[in-house]
Image (cartoon, rainbow, N blue to C red; front, side, top):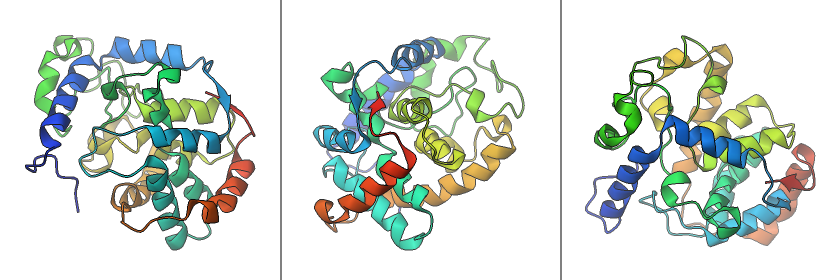
Length: 262
């Protein structure tokens, strides 16, 4: 099953318009500015679970399939992984927290527009690969015609490692910064999943592999495993939040401080 971007659904027009604005505005300079601003982590102090509850107020306009509260999607993802990989508790927790950066949409986090929070992500600072959804709209992005940014490598070099690549700004990169700066003890594969789970050009189309290093190659295997659950665990099976909550609270305590800076 794949997400259907071209189906004659009521959301189709909205999703396409979303990507037009996203592709025009996600420039190298914009991303740099956002990372500097949000990297300060000076908005609020709260626990991971408090953030899960906050997320219920967010709707993701870029997703053609999802109409449920976010916390249910997070727990559906986490529980599906837990069933198939009972021993990888770090992966269960990653399923729960991977979308928490969507709080960027809320007024207390600056109320960023949807195009700067959700949607497929892609590198900035080098050519936009043809495999990126609605690629045609990049032609209006100033970086598209900037010789510093529009070649295969742009500002990067062969095998430089995705850690050194700037990604379009959104919830993935923000949550990655939050987890990393708050000194999570999750393995590097978890941080990789958090940062690149919307990077479909990489894990669906195998673009941008020339920028990866050996650690990225290893971590990508986990991301490919994870992505099966992320998009397609949106089952109609309702999760009893109170029932599974103690288990996830114990994982949060294991891998994170009690309060995080956001």
